[in-house]
Length: 202
Length: 96
Image (cartoon, rainbow over all chains, first blue to last red; front, side):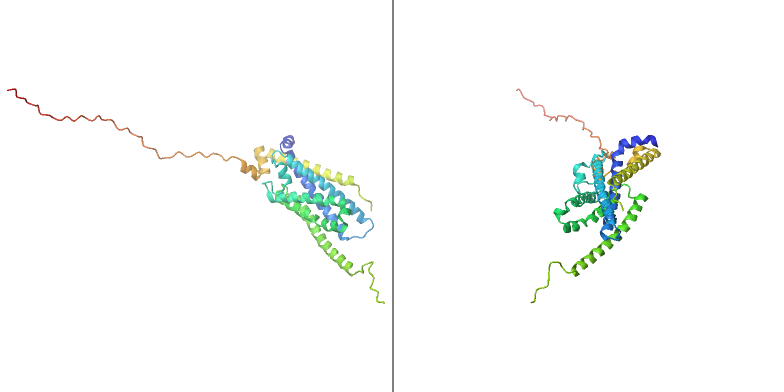
């Protein structure tokens, strides 16, 4: 069995790199989305918790971007698939698994845009940035669609366990986050606006 | 609570990548060595993409030999028509 490994690496090395990096990217995106939702919902109000969550969220997001880049490059270099630059960068350009691959490409662009927008949030405006950042969940969902449709390891029990094990808490956190956002909106609406005094009737 | 270092995330990601790479390589080579043919195993593990299938030339199908046999053309024998001779009665001339 070991004697065949060099042959396997020589013939299918890029495929193995693309599969591994795709799985790593999906795991990192899942962790990052999970941490982001945990942070936003503020379920724990322990001092330092938010700082730790924020640092981990940022680092996993950046690592996910690198893994997505490696995944794309490995697919591009695959001598068997030969997708071409357009097949890797333009949605629906690749005939094989057209919709799943397109979902993955759109997810990658969204991840890049939303991930790097963090460093331009002052220019974008915190409110608009926060609203746009909520679309990060779409990166996770599109990535999941991509993995289920085009992935070679979707039948693996470990993959299914990961998807179910992470998907359920992410869904719960998302619902909790929606509720928290609604409560915060109501609180803001009820609170008196600073700088506005009652009209002088005297 | 201390702020985590980026190195931990990078190392964790690289370790996961390395583990997955080794596991997948071993799995693929094992499936290739146990099955009858390595190419067959690779093809099983990795089905051909649609465009490759579409681009592959279709095997030429030989037309089956038709059972109908054309009858041999028999050239009609040339028969030289016999010249028709008109019997002309001998002309008798009198020389008296």
